[in-house]
Image (cartoon, rainbow over all chains, first blue to last red; front, top):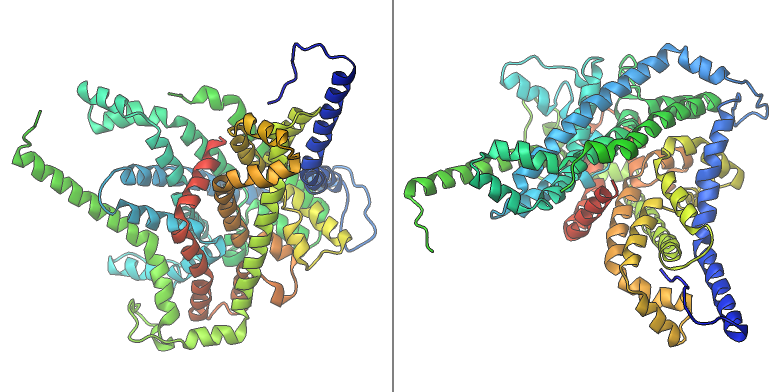
Length: 310
Length: 283
């Protein structure tokens, strides 16, 4: 950073030149920032407030009448059974996928964190679902989950288990979504964990081995604590992502069967863009915002206390 | 010092390695299997798709499905649309983010750090909160059903700016001082020295951004109406909603949608992985 703390006497001409160059720097600074600033003001800052405003109105963008309704949208939201079901669905989804993803990703990272021949082939293979879009993933897995001709039911029949309706079953549909998203996303966190693992100094392991620790003890006492910043990050971002799941629900289940897969963002889309009840949808968006805000706060406030650094 | 490893230990090590490879391969089947099953369904003759038990390996290659998909939807048009949106969107974001990052990293102006802090704070605002107002703004701008609405509102990126700022901070100040003594202005320095030096960081960020744009679904779903303007993900989802029962066509279309990005990924794997790791560092 260029700080101007010279000991030269600044007088007359020097002073003027200095003032000129400072002014130039200030103008350049704002000029380089301008496109970002304008974009953020129009598409982030203004919408955040506007969304809040809308949530207190009966707002259908097709009609000119947009009366102020106070807390009506929020009252309707919190007294609607659909909302609580949606919240429960989303919570179920998030509470299942975050630990599952964590375990799978960490397991994969531990597995591929070794220097043996062809290991890069496996890394590439495990990461490849990550570059696949959620829409494509939904298409592929819906065929595997197909009750009639799907691979999954075929495998179940082979081992003598009861075939299921999967995406057509109110009991199983949301778990299918959880499984699909884990397959889609585990490779991403695997790479983050792998980077974390490679950042742990070998000396710790050597010292522990000398002290007679077995591989399980080394994991519990070295890897897990030293990996905790990464784990914490994966958990928090995992929750934030899981609260906003939409694509797979839209493509596969439309929130069904029996509303069992209606998630917050899907509900928001339904209310805002199917029924054009944008006031209600904005109230819902603010509830989501509050949930995510709490998670971010946990991340910032407690992140440094809950985790160990090397 | 040469250690002699007893045969028993060596055998145990070989057995362990063998076991590891078994596990690696089993997981690879789970990760890659669904892709192979998709391709298998896409290229097999129709009478082998809906059979029980499932026929894993097709008796012959059939392009019948592909012809049928191309007859129903302009799928290659969708791919081109997606490529256009992803490339233009990424390029614009890189330009704007690098400009802002230059200002944040190397220029002194009042309010800089406050603006930077607030800007980073916008990262925690979920897309769902800004979606409805932005949709209304698009309506007011007359950008419904246009690519402007896809590219422009997402052009600034707090994460990208942050990443590039960190990178720019590592470039020595002397370089800029020298360039200025030689008479280069700030724009000239930014264009001819800073940007070329940042190519690795820009490629990493760019690839990552490209991936997000290629796979984007919800916003295009809200904005685009004209079928020929659809990006591939939207085209795929709409195709499914109209032809739900035709799984063989779904798998063909999905195969076509997945292949380009898998190729890009294998070719530029290093940058993908770097992007992931960098996104993990901000936490």
